[in-house]
Length: 219
Image 1 (cartoon, rainbow, N blue to C red):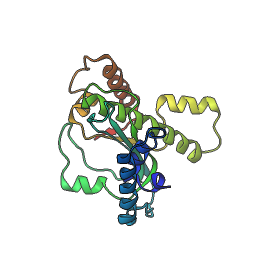
Image 2: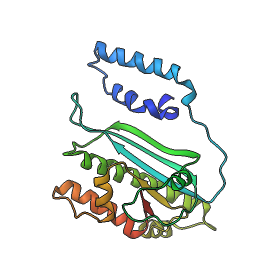
Image 3: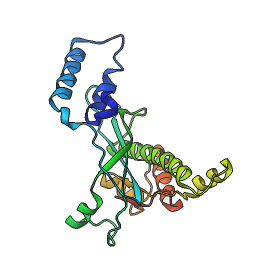
């Protein structure tokens, strides 16, 4: 229940769930700390505000660096349904002004959330961020496809839905967000492709989503 309603402690709970047979005293202390924090910040639960359409999907992915306890990064993903508000033109690689930040903000309904240890070891922070970003964009595409299926006129066949998904013809746009400038520059093509083969495939896949129109904007 806490993982579904409190995204701020989801990662801590998921990591503790991996300690099934070899739990130690520090693990028990960590569990008690999570319970105390859940009681202390009880007002942090989900609150769904009323929103008017049209809507957009905000796909936000983030990853930590490898710590002392594990070589795997911690991935955080969230896909939010937000109101669609068009802003003036933003030049590539430029920072948003205060008006644009306020315009892009607002109520958000979480449609998907995940926080867990990464399944693959990352060779750099940029690689870890690329893994999280690619994963959250894929989850956002699934949600956009379901949204298209529900809001479309009439009923679609499976073949039509497959064609919509292949061409990125969703009824709701997807915007991707990252806090890693290196990944952002790789995504929009300012930098070339990475030399690391694993990250190179990830970056090319993210670029392909932009070219095909599955991802509208990258922030």
